[in-house]
Image (spheres, rainbow, N blue to C red):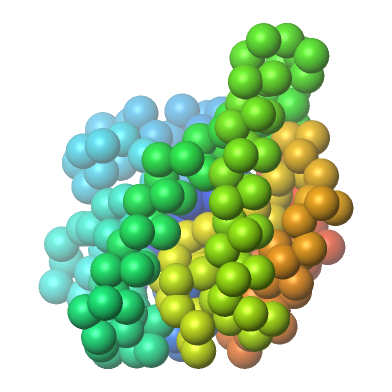
Length: 216
């Protein structure tokens, strides 16, 4: 399968991480936002929503949106649980990730690290930081509730909810959000990074998870 991505996309990282964890090889076609690749007709022909990630499936069709791709890749694996209550719990935390978690963390990373120029003391960044800390507080409480070896939505095995929540939580410090006050999150990040098949943002270079550089 072929993945259209960009080097530093947190949403594309979710897909590459999921594929690596379940042992699905992906070919990458890495595009550049700065070069305008995502606005080109060739990309828009396979990505009507105009952003990455997009996965070309074995039958030649294309699947967009990271959460949809995670769900596809997880079918038939423990990453998508069999029991309906567990599936519903996973969906709850996927909704949380999209509605409350990702946006403030991604915006802070963009404004303060990837395209610096935002004012960390300005009203916009302060509002994002407040929302980010609120979301991280909810996540930390849930992880503490699940126990020291538990996962976000399921107690015994990680799910696609863990994969969805991992990248932007991991990269929170890039937006000025320290994780020192979230012990359950820090322990969970460590568990994620020790899973067989874990893939860093830049494969084989986990020390670059917080890098601002475009170079592979």
